[in-house]
Length: 101
Length: 384
Image (cartoon, rainbow over all chains, first blue to last red; front, side):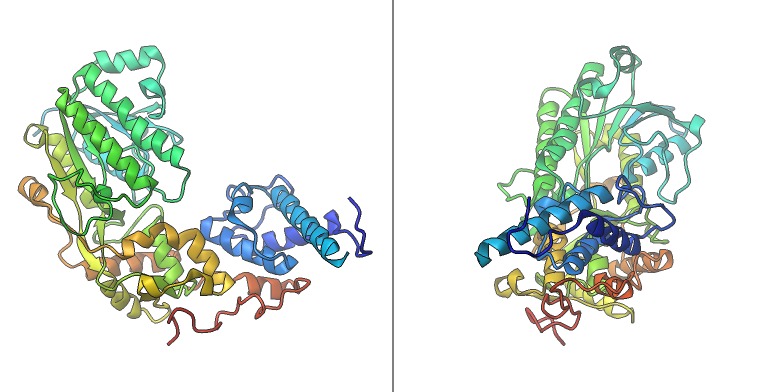
């Protein structure tokens, strides 16, 4: 998928490193090397309340707008978050491109 | 000295089930503990039962024959069990409907089949909240009063208890114990895991939700886990007296006013304001508070409007132990324990603080534009 407006397409590597930084800093338990298959609950000791705060941090940190519960409900690993954030950024960009046409 | 009984406990690894198992083992009974995920029965205080004190049987109440191999199941039927104590249940809120159906309803049906096949007396652990949204005095003799049930949990426990009643009519001998909201130990406040009301307390005292639709006169009934386990154990022992009857294992009712007053005694705590449901509008909450409200508080909201009171005459007539006399003192014990373990108290850094520390600012995410500032406008009368 390419952007028609000249703004660079959100880079997945850049998204990944920022997601890792936020998830790592918010995590109740540290000391784990982060990877795409790191589990938020089992490996990083997130509980339901801390996951809500993480959702807020991702919304705020990436300027995403509200992440609906249906889309966050299936997230269990760091890789899931990278995919979700990448998807939402692409959708936002596509919408902006649509609006700017 | 009571006779040595052969007892099957389902949900034996759960909060209530483990405490019941520990008591039955201590009384000298031969206990088979049906466990699902965890092969160890851990008491509420975190100490495991001696592995040779109890026979752990991995099973699954959602499956026919409790998920046991045919031979193991037939052995249970043929072995002449003296009691089944059915503690297995999902008590978390907000899970998909089919989970409650599978564990709470189908699970009870499967346990009833075993009770029927083996002619085994059953102690069924229900919930006082099968009363749903009925107000006023709830009696142990009442079940279906045409009440509205507030959520899939209540609905499933209502249907499970209805199945027990039907089985009783068909000759299965059963007694029902209905705990209210099960929380920590009466005196130490100790609790193994923090669920339901604890999550509400955490959000409220950390100021993550500052206004809650509800009424100060509404009542919540918190009951100590050790008291609940004592009542279930007593009903199991004295089944001949208990058979065919229902026992409320309830504590001291606390009004939301009582909650507010106790929370206000703790200097680090924020105290939420309860606002009339008719004048509450979630859309007016700042994003942050709305996220917590929508994802958590909505699950419990119905309980902040009910003025329920549970009659426990049957329990008072059977058991020697009585529930906590002073609900506020009991609540203090629970909160003190949460402060000792760090569950309540200073919250970890929030999203805004963490992002600032990481030097991350979103492309268009200024804190006030998203309404994330903790001092955001006075909404729904939450300001002081």
